[in-house]
Image 1 (cartoon, rainbow, N blue to C red):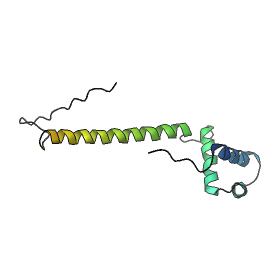
Image 2 (image 1 turned 45 degrees about the vertical axis):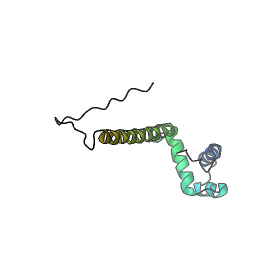
Image 3 (image 1 turned 135 degrees about the vertical axis):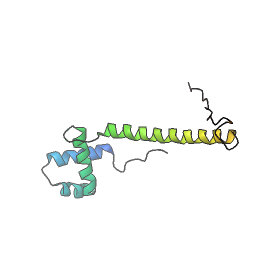
Image 4 (image 1 turned 120 degrees about the vertical axis):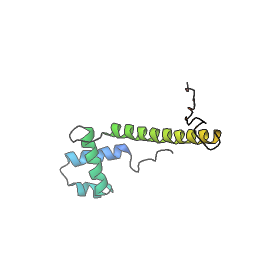
Length: 111
């Protein structure tokens, strides 16, 4: 599934965060001037602080990596379940042989 495009360009968000930090105006006023919700602007400022190391939390890069790994993990789990079903079907509804031993399915490595 393709990633959705953020509703605001990153340059727009960076400029709004810069205004909050440097202009001395209240966050509510800047949000109204920019046409964004206060919650969105507050989230952008918080994430910018995390990325700058001023606040604890996952940086944007770490969050993207975590999401990628979760996606990869989900795909691998789905593939494993498919292989289990194939093995189950190949052995006529049972996954154990006559001695009660579960056979191993050899999957050659992908180059």
